[in-house]
Image 1 (tube, rainbow, N blue to C red):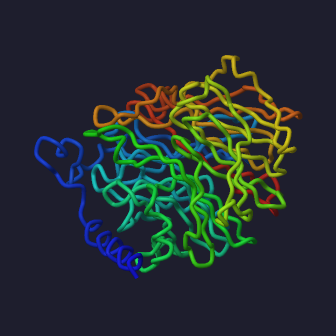
Image 2: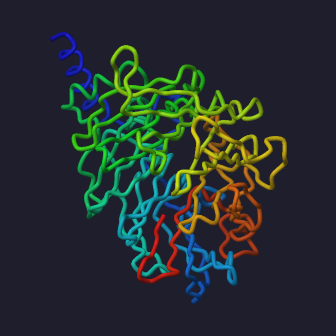
Image 3: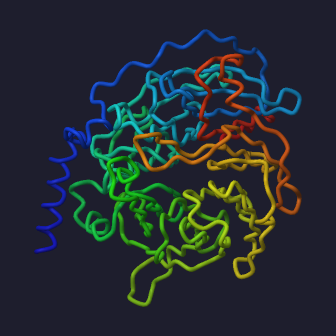
Length: 459
């Protein structure tokens, strides 16, 4: 009864408090928040291209000056026209720190999240019509009520998305798992305030979901808690990093278990390993520079569902690198990890989980500065990496170096990497480039492969 009362009180407090913005305390919080956002600077005209490549990349991008509009940039990935600009699609925001980008199951819609939406009370998710893949159109935007700071995006098979929102409406804990319908209306923020059991599984440790992976067949979701987001913004007593993952029951959208990685220092990412018979997932512990394996259907010694075991230590150079993001090939054999402030991309052969092999030399200097978002291309022949994580400027504590490029890296037959080509967003979006926005900060990407029109791939 006491637990029920505490959970009910907690849920009620959320409803009351999250309807408010971060308070503007004179001399403390007012420099950080502008409750009346200034409109973006007007965009300059640009000249698009009429080429129609088979392989297309979309980059969710912020203006370098944080004053011009945030935008979606469309580029060719075909060999003969690689890096050629195709189109630019503005959204009605600026300084929103475009974050992750996702694509609907039918390939008709993209959605990009705004990480720092709460700074100017802007919307949190931006939708694009890509039914004509060469001329994306901005559709609409919306915002959650209980949560903010959008991160990972997962398409639902029947339309719509599941999205991690790392913070509360004020950027603190708890965050939420946000769901949209096929028309991209928000239909739920989870755990729901009426979900007492699920809420109780998120109150002992900060709940700030960043990573997200879904197994539709096994009826489970895993999310990983990274950081209490408001603590990266000034004024701050120090960044609070999380050590937990949450195991969810998919059909009820409820948290059934909390899985802890001791002293993980930010569990930024989690992904199920394709084809693994136990639905095992890999998770990244940033401070430890470690890759852990999560077994969602095993039970620990206390009978709690979900077990975490150390899989691979990436070594001392990778410790405390601010961010470690990942992707895995479709066959579940190779996994790739961006080590942001180490300026390095690690490659592991995980085909035998009892004998993981490292495929890169951690001491080799790679041609990348600040790598973060990483995606294996649909043809499994390349990875695409964006060299930009986060720069909060004077208002925050996280400002990672970057060269603002999109890297198109070959995957060798043995799973190792060959650095080859890139797109320079500073050059493309400065005074003498395509469209002057004081440079540009590409955070994430989606790739379309239309090589076989009967079987297009979107990822």
